[in-house]
Length: 249
Image (cartoon, rainbow, N blue to C red; front, side, top):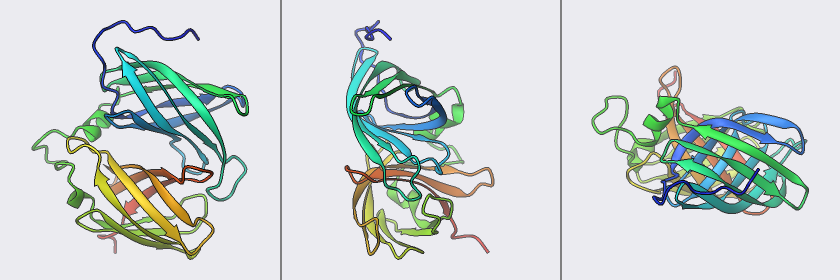
């Protein structure tokens, strides 16, 4: 792939919630994947199936319709917990204003490299990122919109994780492995449904301080769901799908 060359002098905003594909050429493995990108260029790319322990995370800079950046590959293949082998990566490619992100990543430490292609052609994903004012299916992306009791029983550890989120974004939680979670959610950009999250984990093998991003969606049954991706910056990445259980019988 040639070095990308911009076709415009106008910097394209890269922020968005994207759906598409991620391919690791060195391993010959492809995934359906999600991408979270903030307006200031922080990105997290993860498989749609959270049973796959994999993550690309970092930051990118846009000039015209071209981006480049750097980050970390978390490859936890073969692990039954959230630990991973990590490698520094570089990324580059093309972006179209809040609509698509296509490029490549290279991890020279282990010879891994690959491509990704993300689009907002599924209209619901753009709707979720930038909710229209007054739409009855959503509200402004405020912290109290996230309040509730949530559970994730399908993560890699196999232990149900329970979080309570209060009206100001505070997090308290536990899981069946004895982990205790305490942290906070903050607004990355008040116009968009994408939030910063910081969590301290204690009392178990996951002990450490984690940071990342999350957003809220609705399931096919109309239940609120938090999609969470965070890491400790070293060797552990945690991707969660937390279902609100406040109204369950």
